[in-house]
Image (cartoon, rainbow, N blue to C red; front, side, top):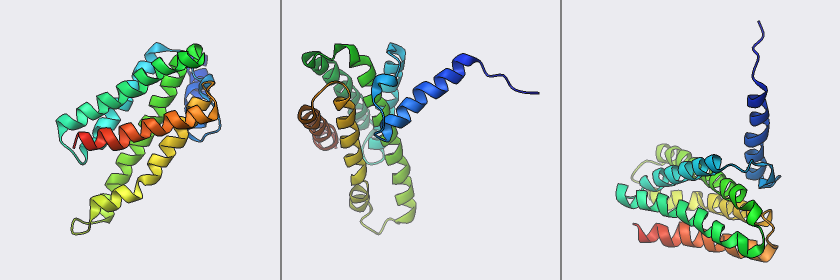
Amino acid sequence: MPINVPAAWTNWANGTPKAFLDILSLEGGQGKLPVSMPLMGGSLGVYALLQTFDHLLEHSFGGSLIYGLASAAIVGGFTALLLPRYDARDRVVQTITALAGVGAVIALVSILLHFVFAVALPPPLPTQRLVNFLLFPLVIWNFFAFTFIYRHAKLRSLPAFAISATFVLVVDFILGRLLH
């Protein structure tokens, strides 16, 4: 007996998850994502949760919670304030959704790699410094993914590059160090 999947589910599975995979692999922009406030809110919530958990592996619960919420607020608020200045008001929801979704996936990969490195590198080794060194490519991936997303939000290359660099510096290095 064949299983009939509703057409709406099939369209969603071929649309939104595929759009996120295309964005993660830097092959497609956020224009394929639906303009959906619930999806944007859910993406920001998952992003905040995973950023909190990623930061919790090395820091206190209170600092990690503030870090996760602050990084989500910076992603959403900064983008919502910035894009209308570049006449990209129509892309705000999709861009925030894409940024939060990509950030959430990168945070999840970071969490998984933390656990892999924790098993592979026992405590007598300088584990934290080595893990931070080994996870630096994720920071680079985050930077290029955010640049790619901002570039597809009608920003020119140099502003997209500068905004992504500023975001990565503020969230990953300054905010992360302040909430130690």
